Image (tube, rainbow, N blue to C red; front, top):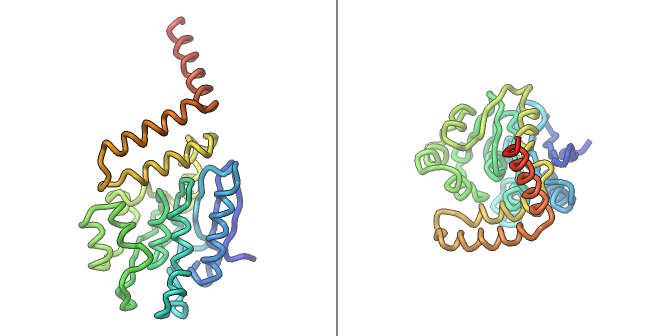
Length: 252
């Protein structure tokens, strides 16, 4: 059986790291399969979101030690798996069934949102191997949280529990392990039947709106995108339906 599973359920692609005996580590094969799975989700016109999870008790324990070499190409191959998630054009969710360690932390942070089982943790572990954090970890953390949380993880090598991750804004919620996938699927309820292109455009704008971007620049982008959406059949239909509901409510 493949070490990365792919299935589509109700317009949601579910990508599962499936090598629990090796703690769902990101070896070269897994990274390539993960890249291919993301490409498949992006190319499927019916898939509007991606959930990434793992089998067993660990979400992902990082890269295997035998793959970590002073070799730029090997490092980039390891990075390619979670960077394909970070660059995915549709919304992504990490459903953390257990600890996310080292490069596994990168994979979790690469997603747009995180839902964690109560026993899951975010654990950098880079210093334990005498390693500088890599794969964009520092950028991902600073995009998602404040200095104190980022420094605690990367400078002081402090693991973050599911409860603390929610408290610090690094995860949306924590749930019992048996409810994890149900919670992740429910998280997509509001977008499951939206046009894929609307979600892609919205995510692109959200990524552009970082703290270094001027408000006027984002206002111009949003005006252009709203003009684009207002000309689309899906927007015209939705506005007509809401208008009809309001009119019916006012007349009753």
